Image 1 (tube, rainbow, N blue to C red):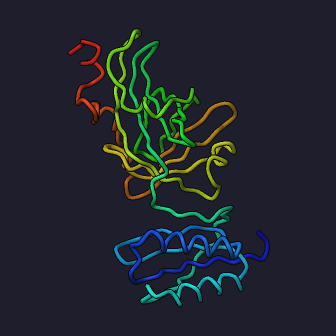
Image 2 (cartoon, rainbow, N blue to C red; image 1 turned 180 degrees about the horizontal axis):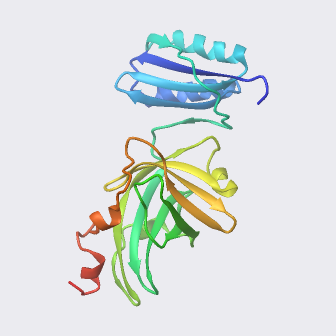
Amino acid sequence: MGGDSAERMRFSGDVHDPSLWAATRDQALALNLRGWVMLSNADTLEIHAEGDHSDLERLAGWLQARPEARELARPGVKFEGHEQFAIRGVPAGAFVIREAQDDGHHYELWLEVDGVMRSWVLPKGPSLDPSVKRFAKQGEDHGLGENDVEGRTDRGAALIWDRGSYERRGRVAWPGALERGHAMFFLHGEKLTGGYALQRTGSRWLLIKRRDEYARPGSEVTDERPESVAGGLTLAALLGGD
């Protein structure tokens, strides 16, 4: 927004209590600021805030006055254009990646959103290579009770290729980010860790690995790790091929 400033604040001290993260978010929202707060290491809370300069100064003063405070650093930072102020680093729900063989071989990405598992069909599965853009087609919603289901089906078999929790990232709040067609998130799985983005192009979607410390250019993780994280079998074994 025109005239807005950005600040990065690193708050050191006794920062492990999630109530402090929530209080920081609530204070930022009360000041009409946008951005995020997250625990960046053992004793540092990192805050990115955008808004009117005087309101940023009020947030800094509020942080310095907190009883948990030991030090407040304010390094320079670029404006990012956020539309919300959110807590990062807190799981937003479950994610599951399924591998299936029914009418054809494919993978499915399931993300928990508002009490259901939203799904995208991935013909080639996920990747750890940021240069690889995987085609995805939005599928039907599933109940949370289906997250652990694997085995043979009437038309083939399905297994749980990966699972875990995920964090919502990005400048736009969920589920609005999905409706706009650009949603960023961070996976904490048994095989996949790191940032990803779902980008809609027309009626199709792309699943893209973000460039971060967990990226592995050239990796073919679905070939390297074909086994189920639940039962340990491969899809071929479930189908009776092994």
